[in-house]
Image (cartoon, rainbow, N blue to C red):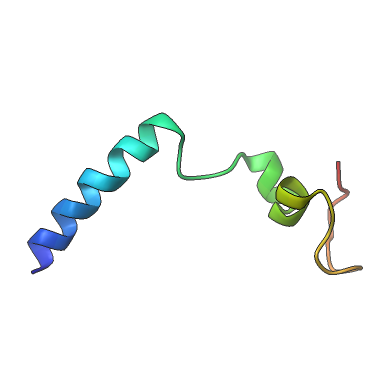
Length: 52
């Protein structure tokens, strides 16, 4: 079972990793994904970094 799940995961995630990527950029991660995805902060006053 483990071998099948591991193999299927590799088959699914390796193409994604090398085409569109699995992670966001460092800048977007620091700014907050809510800002990058929705253009606004999710929780007022919680974010430490300045938004773009």
